[in-house]
Amino acid sequence: MITMPARWDNSSLVIVVTFCLCLLATGLFSLTGLNGAVAGETAPANAGDGTRAAHYLIGAGDVLEILVWKEPDISRTVRVRPDGKISLPLADDIQASESTLLQLKNRITEALTAYVDHPSVYVTLKENRSKRFYVIGNVNAPGEYVLEKDASVLQGIAMAKGFSKSANKDDIVILRRGPRGQFRIEFDYDLVVSGKDIKQNIFLNPDDVVIVP
Image 1 (spheres, rainbow, N blue to C red):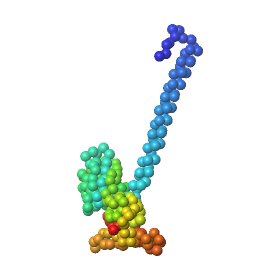
Image 2 (tube, rainbow, N blue to C red; image 1 turned 45 degrees about the vertical axis):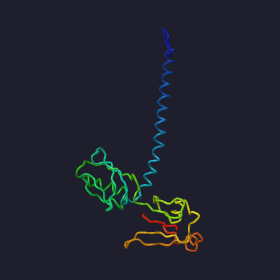
Image 3 (spheres, rainbow, N blue to C red; image 1 turned 45 degrees about the horizontal axis):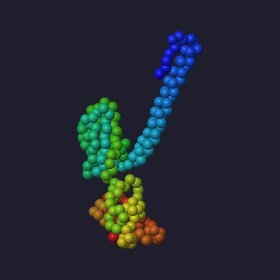
Image 4 (spheres, rainbow, N blue to C red; image 1 turned 60 degrees about the horizontal axis):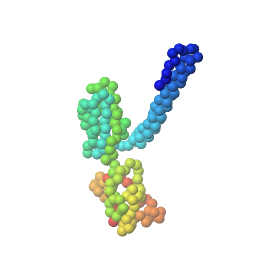
């Protein structure tokens, strides 16, 4: 607590005013620095997420969050149906599968324009459910894995923590869906890693099943 003198002279007044201005300036600079740091930490993270999602192709089963600014009755979380479409109030059915998030955003915006003035639409991938593959059999971590980017058979096995001791590496099979149904692709681990038949190390497709006997 500062005790004020009963009588002031000019020099005392100047000292007190200067002191108060210094305190005020220090506080303002500190707040400005704090806000700048928070903004600087948030922006790159958001930018990186946007870059990764820019080329993602939506597929059946994916869960999307649709936000229409100031329109809570239209905004919602939706799952892409097996026919590749989603449903929204006013917009009805919209094709989503095999589209990027930006393309879907543009379609929704266009569909809502007749009902909403200058709609601002945001589309976010909430859960990747369309691009999964499976590794079963004699691996250390059999299960379902997300196919976030191109991954070969060897990379898929690595994601499953490699072979168990009893694995038969020469008789691996990939089950894949085609236009005429499911078919088998043989994979000989020793031929691939030795370089004798590197072409067997194909990229995995969504819903592929890698079987390690």
